[in-house]
Amino acid sequence: MARQKREVSDTGIYHILLRGVNSLFLAENDFETFLSILKEKTKSKNVKILAYLLLENRVHMVIDVKDENVGTVLKPVCTSYARYCNRTRGIGGKLFYDRFKSEPISSKDELLEVVSFINFIAQGHKNSKFSSFENPICSLKQSGMTEKQAKNTEFKHLFMEDYDCLSKAELISYIYAICGVAPKDFKTLSAEGQREVIDKITKDRRISKSKVYEVFGVKKPQSAKPIRENTEIVLQNKQEKTKKRDLSVWLL
Image (cartoon, rainbow, N blue to C red):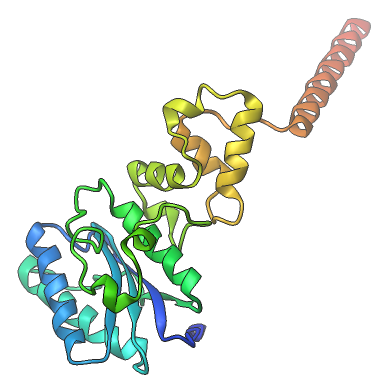
């Protein structure tokens, strides 16, 4: 099956996601090496790294490639880092899960939202120093953003994530960013309050209700229809058992 053609950004700005087959970074030197390669491979091009976040098994970036092809810009970065890992870890095979994902950013509002999203997730993370939140590559002046805009915590949805690869702690951070509710607080809400929170989290955000209930540590409530169906099945089974018992008595 042919790969889907990448969407091209009219602005030249993309939100990039790199995922590892396992861990992209095992030690602090790995993070530092990736950043060094990223800076080296992009400094000679008309490219700006507007935001970034390095986590154990993935990398988020907002990159302005102008007239450059985003694949041409990132391929040398990924290739060089994969060679470094193969050399230092003494292993071969794939390092990255698949080709990098890219989402075009078409407006200033979209840019501000995704940058603030990345910086929000970096807050309080143990690897926050490997992020634009603490150590930006591109200055705010170069990016055309104010500090308040770059570190805003109001964003409408979560960006380009495979939630199966996230830890529970990371999911809690994402969910809290949307609704401001932590697991311990969720359990104190009424049933109606819990439904409102779940709806707010799952609407247009690519995360299932089952996963949210799992994160909050509560059982997903059954809908009324399955309960009625189960009741009907139980009654039907009881009636059948009664008929069989009556028939057995009659046969005796």
